[in-house]
Image (cartoon, rainbow, N blue to C red):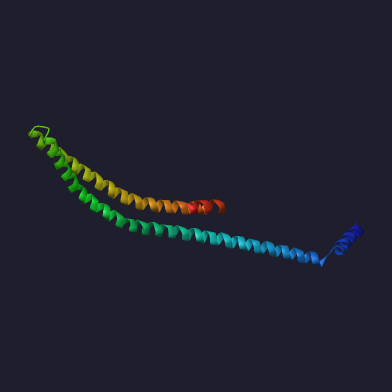
Length: 163
């Protein structure tokens, strides 16, 4: 039994090659390098993902503030719409009086003013809800797209982020 162990040791020592050891060290260094690059890539991709979330929230808030200037113009239109609708209702009532009896003039004025007030209230509610919904929707969409960009592969990220 002892001679077979000695033969194995001699064979092992004969097959010992220092170049082979260096190659193994190089491959181990390569694996170490590639794993450090992969961990660096993971850390930077997380950081980029977090930065993209914060940047998208900032941009959505900035865009909603910029859109509020447009909504101010819509508010002016809302106030003008009251006067325009009253003017239109009076015009329609006068036009209708040429064809109908005199008492229908009061009825048509009443109905037209009622409709104009109803329309102006509807427009003001619609525009105010639209403003707030656009702010929340833009923030939600930017966060959703940022999260989707974090979860997808690089090819899918490129396609989503181009949207």
